[in-house]
Image: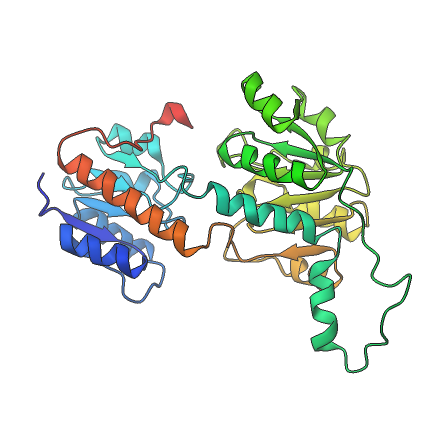
Length: 331
């Protein structure tokens, strides 16, 4: 396969990335930025040598099995690959790559912003002045939130992002606890002052804020199940900038509606972009902070993601192993 290989990009990318891809490859772009339909994806996968999808593209086993013989690389624009059946792709001889590492700091920043926003009721506060015709002014007992310093933070998933969140959390006076498949290296634990919990259930029952940083896999689907959500303290907060499917949304909504949880801040949702209307109602009541999947939405991260995609494609076309190859055993 040569650099003249056909590259099909499913969504709009930053201008500098698209310009570089057009310069290097025979690139077909999505000028409208409208998510491709399943039929359009099927056509692209029959005619392209390399597909560059995003999280909005569901590349399942059926589409992969029907793909043309030309398709040899799926160079995902994003870190998560839960929208791609990696096992089916590998079985068909298609290499899958992603863009790890470039989103860490931006998602950690957003996570801390959401952790700060819920206890201090920032989302409610910013609506007061624009919406109120006659704000009565300061009062000693009005819009009271909760202090963050001294609280216990539970991090579920201590990878790159979890560690970046832990470093930031310490600066705000939070005690850091974490659950992971296995403990991180002692030097990392000591550097971020984190306490490991082998039992997720035990950690959930003891912390004041829970933040999720695990990938969506069959093992993490509804990791925070109805049973586990009941373990959270009534005055605890839940933050999710990972994937919506990690939480049982129906169970979480029920606990919030019944005032059995202090609040939640969510940047991702099950079945997005569809949003359960109950979330909107809870947001108006000040019980949740809802963000439109923008945890990694910085110019810098999007350009860095694009550059990683280009490196993976060029390496593959040069008949070398791409640096960010994803295998089923890694998921």
